[in-house]
Image (cartoon, rainbow, N blue to C red; front, top):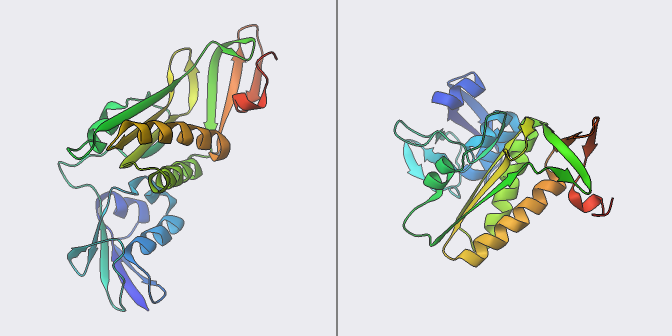
Length: 228
């Protein structure tokens, strides 16, 4: 069957069109269609979790099934709404405040914010600074997948993850994770799990600039004993 997808604002800039007709399988939901569009237009990934679903000019839930001839739209944040993506990789300094504001609401009882900073050593060797590189588009999608998996696995409300790339000096923030939940224990557990998963699967690489000269691409701290 065929449906028409309309694009507005930032989505229109990303896709380069105001609308297009797409073939989908019978039984496809609004949420499944959004996933399909992410694969077609990877730059849509940062909007994940921040769009409203509209089918034939009526707001619907993500599990709403599509019918042949439907016109759908994924409504990006409107004027007055937040413009901060929940998942982001970029060069600018990180600030958790907009993420906390975005995820907070009266139904939660805990907001856990983790900031990973640049320290002055790796193992027993002194560091002068760090440099991060990423396959940015893929990294954003992976961070979004990690956040979605955390939301399914733990009793939490929402997740946001921002990671910085480029050269970072000592004490600068390299990664920010915000988790909201009804209770603190689930949020704390989720943050710990998220950071482990980022180090395991996110296409983000770290180069040490050593204090005594030279550079080295390094992996997770788990890969090197503390006495080396």
